[in-house]
Length: 113
Image: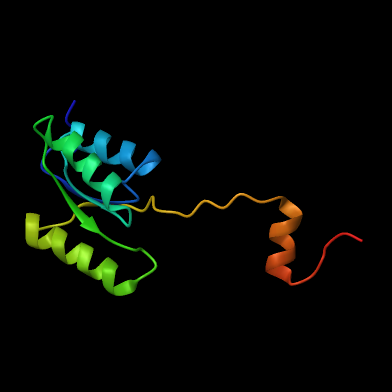
């Protein structure tokens, strides 16, 4: 099935995990994908995987916390493919902590006696 045939997708967080899987799936469904992330090695690995299967993909280093970098990624997408049909915002930061520690940092206080 090629539900995204002729579509252009910009996906953030594609160096690994859900972002990578999203880029791979959209490409497999026919989309031309622009893969973005701050981790260059993983980003390039994702693009190699997609293009090795005969699908269209390019990489763009992008820190989604930087407005100019996001604008550049959108601009690259439109320059490369002439349009942007799909945007998947998957990038994120993982921090593991105990709930009470996260609360304490966010509130500036100790929540429990």
